[in-house]
Length: 361
Image (cartoon, rainbow, N blue to C red; front, side):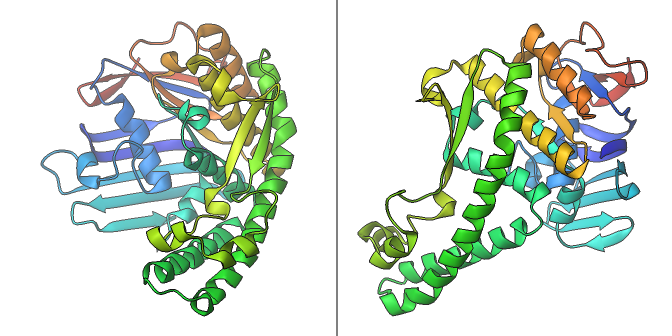
């Protein structure tokens, strides 16, 4: 998949822009505050339904306006030319369209648009909370496991009901039993999916690291969200005091983690911040490579402040990998890149952003 055309109205300081993209590297440069990141934010909003900068839509809608609109024309490997659009209002109303038809779930657009982001906080994938790594893991599963989304939704729904029962204050084993049974069934399915996905991803990640960061030798280990020497059925049945006190289920796939290990030591404990950025980048690229292999689908990378994330040597390797994987790149920086990053003529475009306006450079 790739973006062919993008139209944006009222996102941050972008009043109205209309852009045509090439299939390779599309780079936006300009001073801070010019509107570069707002372009990436608009694309993310279109594909994911939310901003990566703020959970509040009023922060994203241009000052003085009541709604924003983002539309795009895509070229998809299976469906050909596809149009998508999102309109979000200060009132909270959201309208989604796919090929001219109203739709209700952003997952329909997300499925169509495998979108990876490399933001200044990318190292949080290594050094941050387990939730960051679960989100990373679930991105890959969403795109290659057809039953993943429904399984995850059903699991989270059962978890919410069990937590609500715990919070009632007098949850008896009989009241919890139905939710325990459903959680156990869904937890087994979800865990099996994740383990299988990571088994497929492991060799791809190692090959990606060898190409991007050959100095790192790594393995990833899945921690399922409850002690390896105990059964989830037993743990749920015991109703630990913490569960009753806080109204939160303490064990299950919602507490899972993915641990990166280097020579038997946890990567987050031994890597520098810069190395963590490189590892996180490799983790995301490996998912794109696996998707390409399994589904013959290309992905889009949004890269904010590209020069800050990778030094020139690793940056050259990174762009070479993405070019080999047929990825489309939409990136930003304060200064224009020194070269075409290895992309051939016709697959490299540069834009200058100034005060919310964009011109070819």
